[in-house]
Image 1 (cartoon, helix red, strand yellow):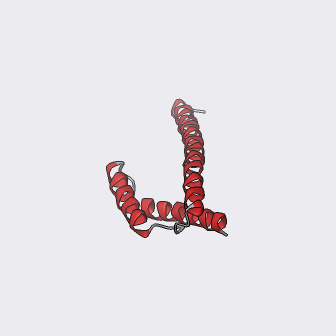
Image 2 (cartoon, rainbow, N blue to C red):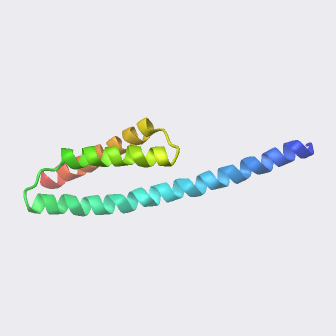
Length: 98
């Protein structure tokens, strides 16, 4: 293997290690987020509040789109990602109220 190919293989390995660490961070962060949304869902169920809050959801999507732009991430991807998370949270809240 040439020096250039060896260096490319090393760079690839380093990028993949970083990706693996970031994937772990994402999973643990989502786990922590869902612990809080579960607590919110329980409070909503105890106090007969609706499982969704469209005004807050709209604010959160707007905020995430802004953060995505700041992070040089496609805002449309960020919006879709948050919409997916919100739909999961609402589904959990509805189960708690069922």
